[in-house]
Length: 517
Length: 117
Image (cartoon, rainbow over all chains, first blue to last red; front, top):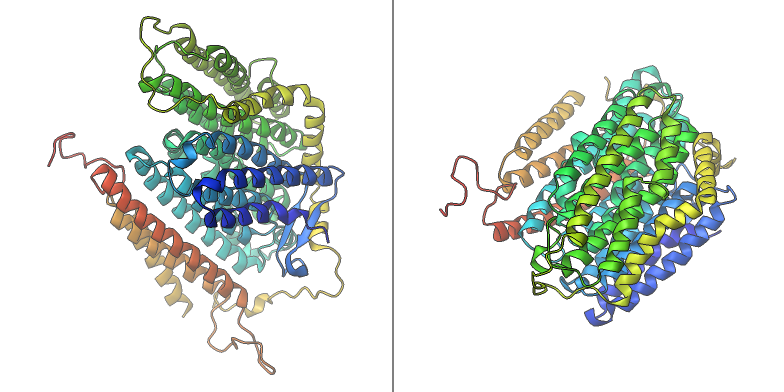
């Protein structure tokens, strides 16, 4: 059996345990080695998935509806690769010194990666819950890394909200198991299509609860008010890694909708017509939030909301073209937002007590490097031609043209792009052009980030958008193939369930149900 | 039996939700605990209510109880326990840092802000 699909979970988990045992002085090297090993594995998984095979890993070799499976198809491989690149940059940035602000940054960081990779690879809803909890528990610790009142305040709301989300997730899992008798996503697809009429309402409720939980993680509008505070309060490398956390919710929704729910009578029309409307409102809320933010970190946090809205507006269309557009936009927006968070840290350290507040400050010693980085990241985030943000938005707009509300999505994306460009240009002119030259450089609160590693981390994420632009054809082709594989459904379902003649697929007979009596 | 269990789950959920919406962190934690009890019971009874099914697959056992919800609920209890412990620690830390146990980290509105008490 090919053991590659489990390595993205085992490597960071083993590294986390090893890091706990090591003294703090030796942790950076081990963490970086683990990260590089994960990068190799992620590339390997991408190469394996690229020929269209769905790599299924049966833990303990138990057959699928009974045992637990990990599934490395194109989508999972892509998400693991995006997470790993972002994690590498965030880790390199943290190794400049902010990892020493608290005691256990590195073990928590690796655990968070294990949770993220596991959530992308699992083929089973209960394990999805478990990996959600792993990544959330690590993220609680990472959010509090460095301490301070603002983080404690944001932390309480974040933890309580996510615990409530977990309770909802468990209710949904209980209902799904009670009605369908399975939690394997591929098996759900099979069973849900033939669920008896008496159970359809319960199955639909369970699916709706699951969607609500995923949208809470993705921060769709009525469930999104936690995000700007939390992301703006987190430390830079942590916020950069958090840029991929909202994408976990979007990934889970996409996976469940295309593989599990599509075509079942119990869940028909579950997401329409409210999800596109909420996606549009999320774009509007994120744009207004970016306009109102007084700190650059707040702007970046609100851009996460804009990207959530854009991705969901594309995904809810439900055609392979729209999904492909969303899958091209997803790596772009994740890496660019992560880069913005790292850039905020670079800028705020050089500006001393002014921090990342958007107003005039002392002249910056490294204005050329940081200004160029700001230009590329800002243009990519706003979706200005010629970078990948523009290409992604064009693909999304082409895909939603026929959909209901397509015109509104066009208007929303165009206006939001304009406003975001305005916000970033205003910030850039305050930071780089209108520096008060007679103002002496403020005493630095923290040493500025001139180390090779942090510059390399920043450049890695700055380069992501130009690379995604230059390699637009292969990346878009991969996204298209991914969307086709998802919407075809049968490759995934057949690969997971297989054709195992020995396994008797018993179901609990519905006549024996005693709850209803 | 089914009615009793459903009513108990509903009551637990209602109390949990009420406490969850209270302004003090301690009530919120209690609310989350009640909510997790309700959820665990719900999962557990996803494997059907029965007083006569055999718990173990010994020879001759009839109408086995479904073991999967038991495994799921065990996992959920452990995770919920860990999370609650973390939340209690976090709440203590937040109270120490912000000087109040209000969930927003601010004193309640009816007292004038910024005045030491």
